[in-house]
Amino acid sequence: MHSIVKLIGLIGVPLLLLSLIGATALTWRRYDMAPINTFGFVVAVALGIGCLAFIENFDTGQPWFVDDNGDRLQHEDSVAELKLDLDLAEEKRVLAASKVARAAFDRQYSYRDAIPREIDRLRGESASYRRWHNLLQWTLIIFSAAITGVTALYDTPQPGKGILIGLGGTVTVITSVMGYFKFKERGFNLQQTADAIEQHVTALDLAIAPYNLGDEKENLRLFAENVEALRVEQRKREQQLDQPHQGQQEIV
Image (cartoon, rainbow, N blue to C red; front, side, top):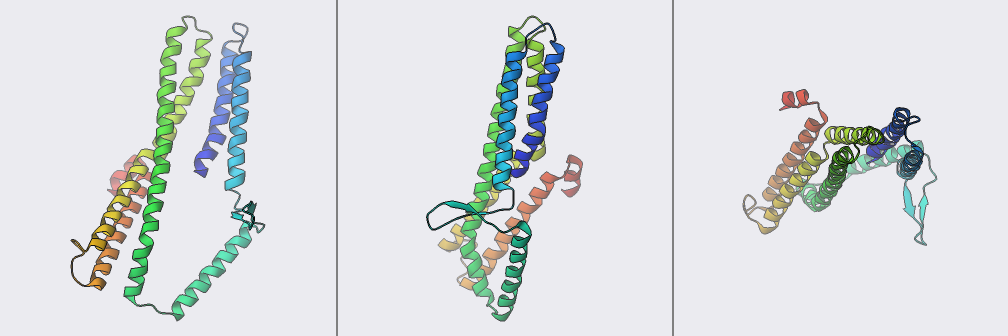
């Protein structure tokens, strides 16, 4: 999410301003671009401020917490201090775990209890990717239709040419973003993995195949193996999506 907002702020806003400048240069002394420039400038400023506010609130490394009165407050520690605290906490956890050796059955049972949270996380990320895909897809459809409408309405080159330049540039950016981030594919893979893991959870709870061995320890061991195999497969699919087309073929 952070990277997408940064991409919009760093590319979308300058592209919009450049489109306005290009349209103004093409229509100089032939068409009054002042209303369109004013509207576009206001949109660019609002978009830039919105992206900046999002980044400042969510990507500064300063986590939020809720006090006793229910108010959201920002942590006063720096990012370096928080990372140090996290490293120290991890070392303490490792030391405590080494002193208290748990049986494999206990670890597998705890693993089973943590799976519902993992399913919720996968589905939450899947829903987020689907929302981004649908938003960009509808924007692409609307702007593509607008290009056809502007072409049909304006017989003269101006001001239709300037509007077409802005619409075409926006369509190009949206298409590139969708092709780079692959929101639809990522959302589908996450949802598929969540559904598969939930199927194993249901089978374990109902003691049906393949978890009808009669031995609870053996069932939990088999369940952990199957779920981990699904998670490994999910990570491989994510790596394939991060690779260029040629790299994907080599991985497969």
